[in-house]
Length: 129
Image (cartoon, rainbow, N blue to C red; front, side, top):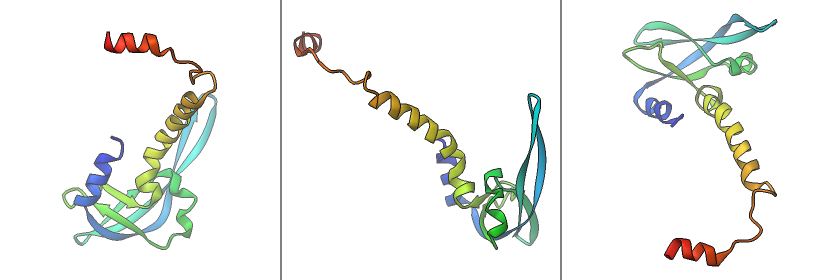
């Protein structure tokens, strides 16, 4: 459900090469604390037009090491671009899914959660009458 639209767009969008050329910083205030989030700027050419989009902030640490990135864009609206790497495609879903599966695994395999005895007589009467 999280990845469906993104993977569908990868099949329909056009592919081109983009370049990371800087960062956009945004100050975020959380309670009394504040911090700065850096978004890499990715530029690419879409049908002879130069387009600039912002990559996910998780890509900020590895962006200086990248010479170029693969970009998928919608030909009707090139600003709807997806940077094709782990951070652009998989990172948004895994930040949500990993904690969910971690909690789910703890609940399923918890010692107190696994039944130690199953009464088959009660179970068979409930199932088969």
